[in-house]
Every structure is written in structure tokens, then in C-alpha cells.
Length: 272
Length: 268
Picture (cartoon, each protein chain N blue to C red):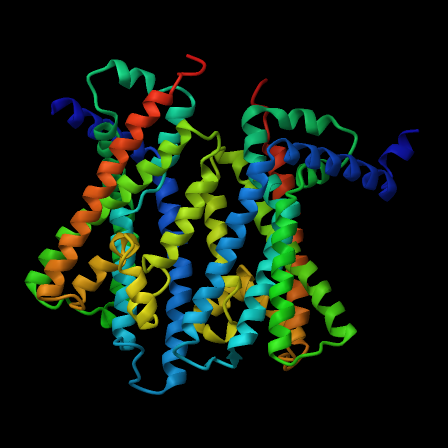
């Protein structure tokens, strides 16, 4: 009996996840007007990013090797990745410090599933899927403007790389959230990470020197969306960036798992 | 008057308790700024040596972003709107209805103390950042321009505060004000010159923007510093800015009076 409990059973986890999703839908539908308003907010900020690109390209034809519609594709791709990250993980990461503060983590630690799994997947942000869809629409329009017809292989590659990008966002954010075990008030740090998203949607060609090094090899923001979009837009010179993105995703995830375990060892319940 | 002085005092101390948050905010906030500067530098290099965009050389463009960063640090409302909305929602304002303290003046004191505390923490990283870029930093056109710049920053701070205060008053009528605040913030972000100087926009768009308060929330003081607004245009600009401050103040008072009539002190 004990042996069966400890073995990894994907079907059971799928069932747990289904229940969590259902719970999220119910929760969102309680405040319908608010749900719609948040979607409007996200769309507005996305439009704002596109406006910025529009203004930049009033005054130039290219940033490095990137043309206007390629950058639109990049902003769209970056939004797509960011919104999917938001849909699955963002609320859960920001809630972690709250779980520590009010002691609810004790309860989650007792559940007979992997704690990181429940903590990471507890809530689903449904509105973010709508934003992700709008990002996809912008990307389709941009590929049309570029007269691009990506092959099935390119689209597949793009999606797999998006997955790696989301994994990076998630790992770094989760690692930062785990710091809340020590400081409890980690909102400043979480807010800070939000600032870094801004870099992910800028063309990598613009950067040089230390800045490029840091945001490629330490906090790989310049890989997260640039590499997938380069695959889609036929802008990949060599397979190196792809390998780098996968490598960094694995490194980030490993470090975040290590940080999470270290934090848990440090955890003393708030209520006891 | 003395009671408000106490509010400022307590406000500064409360805010300094979050100095780590402030520091994180400043340092992280510099990262996207550096990124935008990189993008502009690449654009200027692509356009050829010594090229200019609108009326901006590369040095002037970088100066523009440095100045708005400074103005923003001095005038931006960081959490006052959330706090006011929470005060209304939780019924905390009831005590102000009973005490001889004006809520707006009270919040204004807290706003200024938060700005002072923020500046105390952010000054070092900001100064360091500006020093590393000093060769791009353009001096103000004249002492007069610099004086007007400081005066204009004061008006900007008031305008920012009164607009946020009015928005927070929405909490009298709706439960969740954050979405509305974010929607307004998006417009402010774009139309106040946060992302780019407004005078590189097409002329028609600039004319439309001139009829809104947004340029006076950030762009205008920077344009004064850089001597883009001078002579009669400067005087006119300052008068319009003062006009917006008065209008926003009037609106804030009006909405408060309306809100109080609607208010039922739930849960007190």
C-alpha cells in the first residue's frame, strides 16, 4: 500500500489538476464583471506595447536586424509566453508568501501529493488565456504582413520553445517567491520580476556587453521570447540559441527546485 | 497646521520601514530603462552618425529619459490610491468624519512624506546611475528654465495626487477599483511621455494630447528642463498645468462630497 502511494502516478495528478481547474472556473465566475475588466486591462497594456513599437518605427526602419513586423511578431510572441505563464503560475507564485504568512501551507504539506505541484497549480487565471489568444491573433497578422508561411516544423519548434520559455519564467518567479520563507514580505521582489518581463519583448540585437551577458546567462530574459520568434521568422543563424534556451530552462528549473527544498527545510509554521 | 506636520512625520517613519521595498523598486525599475536606452542607441546607430530623431540628438534622448525618471521618482503616486480605496472600503474614513482633520489634506501629507522617504532611499542608486551616464546628460537651458522646471515638478506632483485621489474615490461606488486604476494608468503611461518624448509623435496626435491633462503629468516638466518650452509658450504651459491642478482639485473635492453622501460605513 505504502509503495503504491509513493510511486509517481500521472493519472492521479491529472485528476487532481482537473479538480483544481474546476475550482478556478467557479471562483472566477463569482465576479464576472471584474473578470471582464481584467481582460480589458491586459488588452490595453498589450496595445500600449504595440503603440510603442509603432512610434519607434516611425523614426527608423530597423533595430539591429529586426524590421517592424518582425518586432511586432516578437512583442506578440513575448505576450503569448507571458500570458500562458500568468494563466498557470503567476497567481500561485505570488500567493506563496501569503500561504506562508497565514499558515495555510501546513495544510498543503499534509496532502498526499507533491507539495510543489499543488502550490504551483492551485489556481488557474482564465482571463490570461483570452490575452494569450489576442497575442496569437497579432502574431498571425504579423506573419501575414511579413509574407511568412511557417512550416509545421517551425510552428512545432516555436511551441516547444515557448514551453521552455514559460519554464524559465516559472522557475525564476518560483525561486523568488520561495525567498518569502525568509522575509515573508516578498511583494517588492515579485513586483521587480514583473519589470524584467519588459526586456523579454525587446529585440536581442539591441543589447551588448554586460547587460546582454547578464540577461542571457544569469536571468535569460533575452532568450525567452527572442529565440522562439526567431525560429518562426526564419531569423535563426545557428542552432546554438535553441540549445542555450533549453539548457537555461533546465538549469533554472534545477536551481528553483534546490531553492524550494532549502526553503522548506527552513520553514517553521506561522501558527505553531 | 501642527497636526498635519505630525502626519508628515509619522508618514516618513512608516514609509522608511519599507526601505528595502523602495530600494528593490528603484533598482529593478532601472532595468527596463537601461533596456530602452540600449534600443534607442541601436536606432541612432542604424540611422547613421550624428542623426537626430524629431529634435532629439542621442544625448538629448538619453537626457529626456533620465529627467523623466527623476520627475517620476519625485511625483509618482505609488500606493496612495490603493490605501485610500482600502480606507473607504474598510470604513476607516469614518474616524476622519468625526475628527477635525481634513481627509484630503491628511492624504496629501502622507503622499509628500512617502515621496520624501522614497527619495531618501532612491537618491543613491539614481545618482549613481546618472553619474555613469553623465556624458549624455544635457544641462538645463538656463537658470530660469531650471527654476520653472522645479516649479512645474511641484504642479505635476499635485496633479498626479489629485487625479489618483479622485480615482480612488470610486471605491465609494464599486468594490474593486484596481482595474479602473490600471486602465487609467495605461493611458497615463502612454500619453504622459513615460515611454517616449511626446514631440516625436505625428503633429496631429500631439495636438489632440495637448487637450488632455496627461502631458502635464510628466512630459511638460521635462520639456521645460530641456528648453523645448520657452518664452510665452512656457508661461502658457505653466498656466495650463496650474489650471489642470485646480480642475483636478475641484473634482476631487466634489467626488468626495458625493461619495460621503453615498457612504454607509459598512462593518463599523
